[in-house]
Image 1 (cartoon, rainbow, N blue to C red):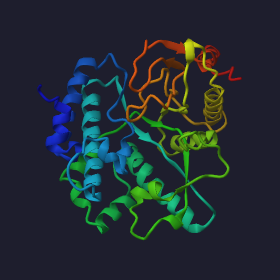
Image 2 (image 1 turned 45 degrees about the vertical axis):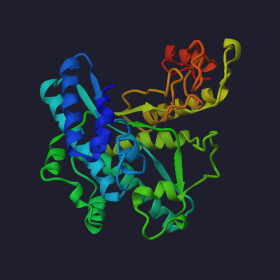
Image 3 (image 1 turned 90 degrees about the horizontal axis):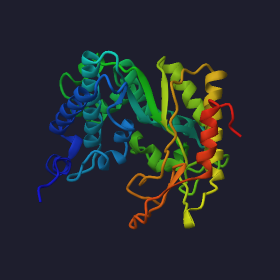
Image 4 (image 1 turned 135 degrees about the vertical axis):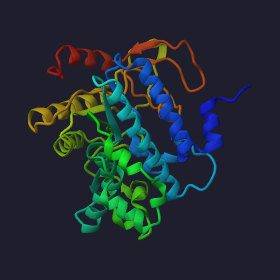
Length: 345
């Protein structure tokens, strides 16, 4: 059997650590744009692009063989930004009525205490994991702080000649992001040699003021409002949260309706937070997408963690009858949409 090309690109070239794969993806994206440009109005090049700058960046970009060192991670992050910039320029040149946006897995960081070192760690983590990409998307350049770190740690070879000029030449029409939870950081869990890219992995601690999902993701609707308003103020672009939701372990026996009150409460609080960001803070929000409408294999192919407002009758290994069964949150969301967000209770 002939091997599928995406997997071949991972095995032979180590995915987006290779500029060859970067160019192949860009070529593919241009072909998709040529086929659907003018019909599709809004475009994204990569999902949660800043995720390529911390540890998931290796697995999510086809890196299979070799040392998972910082230089490779920075190379992956830069290669994908180069691809995004070239794709954005191509779309704007050939389909000027279409729009494209950068997309982040936005991580809002809190200091675990008022200790200045906790505050410092939270700010620095956000600069590397969030702001570095926000600056590239909205200002056409990387974070000065991150570039200085790269110079100090022999990481500048991850950037090829003309890359920075290409990034500077592109622009985005909106900024999209996913939002699920916030993170508190404790500086005592860090060492002097911990890269800021890994602060979230190494220094995260439970926030005693927030409740958590079964998977430890801390529920923070006010954090959602804060991110919406902050990004709107900083970027002067329309802000588009395109993923927001809560994963819950669920089972529908005999196709009965699941009473997912926890999901309803989560979305109710977060949609209200969005309304407050718009009505009270003046945030420019162009839309909202919850994650997701139906249950799908979450993250790494796991059906155990369900996000949808419609239950899909299957497990990881048993497809059953694949029936779609609306949950209580389905009928709640139906009323929210019909009332344009006015009826949230």
